[in-house]
Length: 329
Image (cartoon, rainbow, N blue to C red; front, side, top):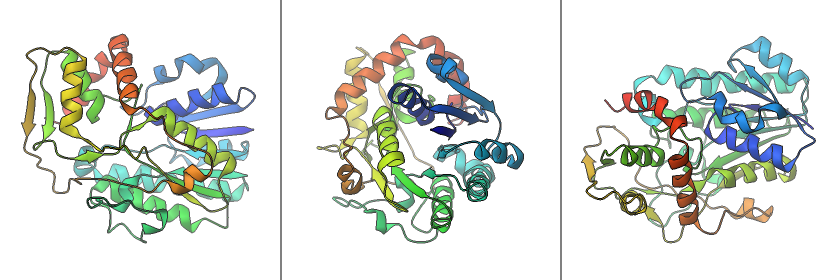
């Protein structure tokens, strides 16, 4: 199989490329990535000799058309993804997340490729109430359920992908809150880790009661692989860990300080000035589990593994700190 992976030098993208190279050594994999602040070619160093890399924007119609014309399947992960940044620069999110998706889908139709897997997000459903788990059918047309500018752009891209069903063999994947190696340290978990390792307090919005369904990125990669090969025509799949008990941000922050032996470290509670900050997310993962996928059973082991990765890879994240922290200033 000849695969085109968009955003493959990003966080989830790199974890996916590593997974595919290990699981399917005969596949020919091409990665296209614009290498924005969150993309990093070093993320692909372990598999660099196994892939073709193209440094380009997915909004480049000429390049996208050329790459899609020579592949069997597209896995589309390229996106702007940080909620706080989306509130400041929503046009950038619209251009990449919606416009770039349209460019790829149009090329996929022209060249009649065999499979297109579009990676969406659980945030298209909006905030979940206590004990609520959204099914795939709970995504309504439009972006009114989504709250942040990021989530709204992904909701519109999700709708766009569904419009192409029937014109191309397409699946949509909606994962929950990912963590793991290679995550840019503006996101909560790697930001907390790297701040503690630098002797700084962990910053929590409010009192830290927010609930996220923490999903290990290598598990997400395995789920995308399953959908690529086993997904039903036109089907959408939620992918989540369904952690039980659910994990509040403050609980994870306290665990992290203990894990890193941060004696004297503090938790800094900050007023959340964002207009919309969803309190809880939750998705029903029955459909993806019926395909044979399930998440790693021990999320805290995965947190431990991820902590160790950041401890051992300080040269990877140290140069990224200024940009990661800039968005919070």
